[in-house]
Image 1 (spheres, rainbow, N blue to C red):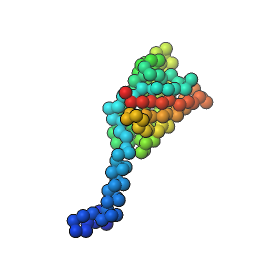
Image 2: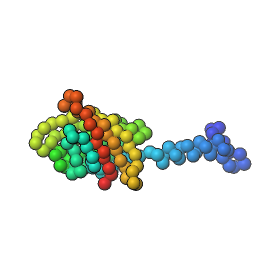
Image 3: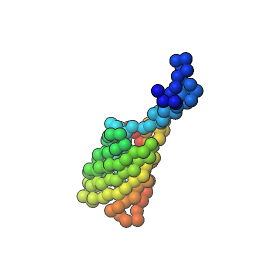
Image 4: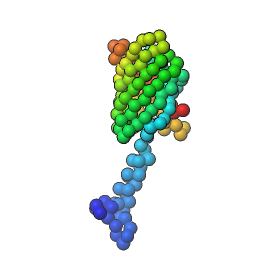
Length: 139
């Protein structure tokens, strides 16, 4: 048994309890996006997703991916990596009018009123110099 989990008289030491508590806190603070559906409750003027756009997320360890459609989006995909509560991803999408767009994003995950919230700061690759913010919320 490692030193941090050392038992004295069959009970964990204070150091052991602190290590266990730290791991439990880390687990509780983890947010898993697997099988989560979200929509965008707020977007920038140059954003094209909206409340009608539904995102279906999946997660495999640190790998996060989603497909989305609705509103002005005919079909879209995103893929990225989750480190703690920070998600970095790239996206590509086709609008209902046929416009093809793509870009990259940095996002922060949180819990708001018992629901997962994602605040995304996006930068269009297909529209040089354009960037903005989307706020997603779990459905």
